[in-house]
Image 1 (cartoon, rainbow, N blue to C red):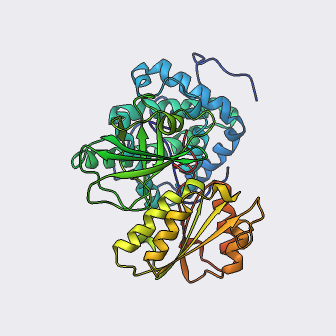
Image 2: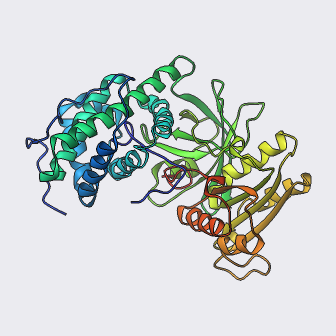
Image 3: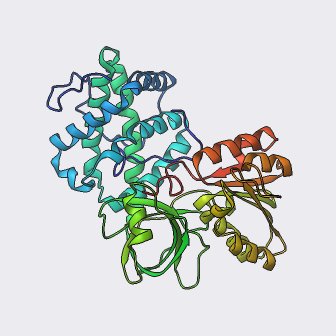
Length: 420
C-alpha cells in the first residue's frame, strides 16, 4: 500500500506474531472485494465511522508485520499487472504500510488536510506509473488484509467505513494526478554536473534537469538512479532556485543504503538520474513572523541552507538565527560555507552545538543550546535533521513558549531520514 500507492508524510510525528496465512486462503471480508472510488459528492465520514476505523486499526496494529506481507502477496497474486510498478526487493515497502494507515487515521477527521495531503500523494505517485485503474485493486487487497487480521472484530459496518475512507483518499489522489498531468511531466531526467565529497560519507551532488523544474526553497525531491531502477529516495534541495536551473543535494551514504551509496561513491559527472515532483510545505511563505529560527542536524542542513538563500533572494527581510548540531566537531560539515554567508548577510547569526565532544563555546545538545539562547516564542522555527533531534528540539521549543503551529519540519519519511 505504500509506494507506489501510499507513502504518507506529515510535518508532525505520528503515534505509532501469529502464524502467517497463505496468500491463497479465502478471506471472509464483508465488502472487501467491492471497493469503489466514490464520486466527489460522497459525504464525509461520520463520527461513528471514524471511531470504527480507529478501533479496527488498533486491533490489527500489533500484527502489522504479518499483515503487510499478506497484503503484498495477495495484491501481486490477484493483480499481477501491478507488480512491475514496484522494485524487485519489497522489504522497504512492507515496513511503511502501518505508517500509511496511521496517517489515514490521523487525518480522517480533518477532511481539508486529508485532501491536501492526498493531493501531494497523487501528484507524486505519477512517477511510478500509477493510474486510476490501479486503485480498486489496492483497495480490494487492503480491505481483505484488514479483515483477515482483525478477525472476529471485522464487521460489515467496519468494512463499509474503510471502503468509504479509501474511496475518498483514492478520489483525491486520482483528481490531483489528472490535474498535474495536464501541466507538467511525471519525471524529469537530470544530468549530474558536479560532485563534491564532503567527508564522513557525505557528497554534494548537483544536477541539471533536462526540462524546466519549478520548486520552492525548503522542498524535497524524490530521486531515482540508473543503477537501482524503481528505488526512489527523497532528498532536500540545498539551494534556492537558481538561474541555471541546477539543484544540489547533500547525500550521506548509509549502511545498506543502495541509492545513497550509489550517489556518494558511484555517481559521476555525465550520469543521468530522474527526479520526481517537488514536495513539502517547509517553505518560507509558511512563516508569519519577521524573525526566524533555523535548526539543522547532519544533512538536515540542506533545506535550511536553501531557506537562508531564499531569505537573501528576498532582500534579507527576516532576521535569522541558525543553529547547527552534531555529535562531534568533525561532523559539523558545511560550517565554513554558512559562516561565509553570515559574513555577507548582517541578518544571519550562526551558532553550533556538539553533544559528544568537549569544545569550548559549542558544547551541548541542540535542545539544551536552544534553551540557553531562547526563548523563541516570537519566531517561526524550521527544523531539519534526524527524527530524534527534531522531536527533542521541538519539545524544548514548545516548553519554552513557541506555538506548535509555528514549528515547521519535513515529515519523517523524507530525505533526511530515509536516504537509502
